[in-house]
Length: 147
Image 1 (cartoon, one colour):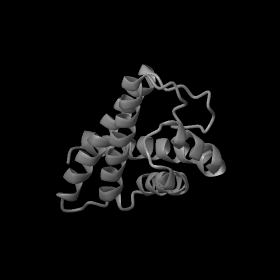
Image 2 (cartoon, rainbow, N blue to C red):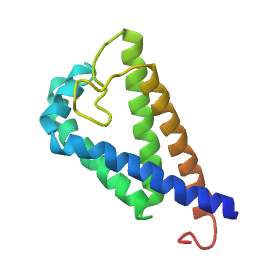
Image 3 (cartoon, rainbow, N blue to C red):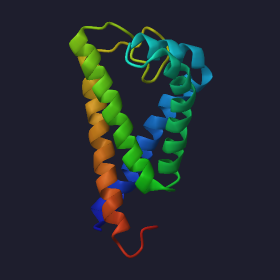
């Protein structure tokens, strides 16, 4: 792994980890508001909304901490990519449907808009997670993956 790849790996760990930690905070503090945001997306059946609202923010927090602390990065980087693919798909689906609801991405506030810029932001974060997963896989193929 080159110096540039190592630097990119560590920078992406902090950036993506920080994004997931930041995204989890308001949802953890306001689970009812997050459950309402999930409900507003009209995708999940009613019996999964509260479970998702309780589990997803903690998953985001733990995932972000794993990335920032450089622990379990292989699984965390892949899970980050899976979550961002899911989030981007949900936004795409709702934009196509013309559904005008709050995103619920970083805030449980209904004023957090879901629009084309939200979709582009999530595509960018998805790209970051995919590059991070690729760099993590390259790193694991090296003789000393804990550099």
